[in-house]
Image 1: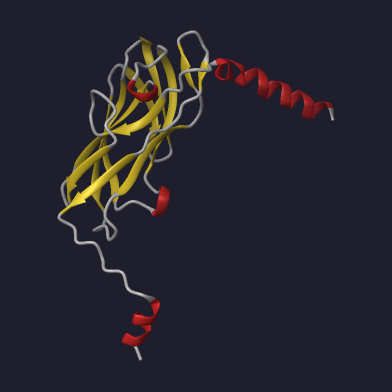
Image 2: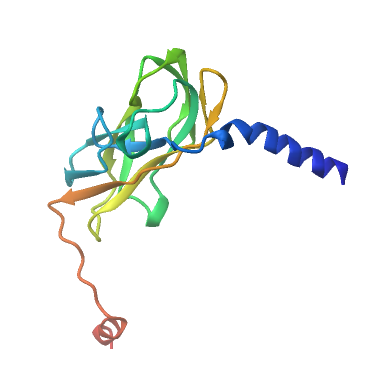
Length: 184
């Protein structure tokens, strides 16, 4: 019983700095713009397109802390999968990066990075197949708390990015009964 209590107290002690923030929940997300969060992009089907992994403040506000380190990954298979796959990554040279965006990347500032909007990387995507349902979502997510230069952890939220493919004809919906009639 005492080991469980020790584990619980350790978890609370590690999470205390992140839990202490009460007003601003910064976001780690994909954006269509390298200058501010833009949550929608229209793309010609077949064309390579670029998105930006970024840290931003809540609701377009400035990032409320100076970045030291953050661990993140791309979310390309949530919500039913994605017809687009990342093919290239160009990391921000003001940070060091270890890992792969599909699994986990640790981005660490060489010196304290105190910007209102931090771009961690530009990611290029290409199409795997023609989408049959129209728009789909892509994202990026923090895998741990983001740490500021004083060593405090910040809980982050995510923001959605909708990709609207242009030049695609969505598949027609059929009822199960009409499909069965075709093969009788």
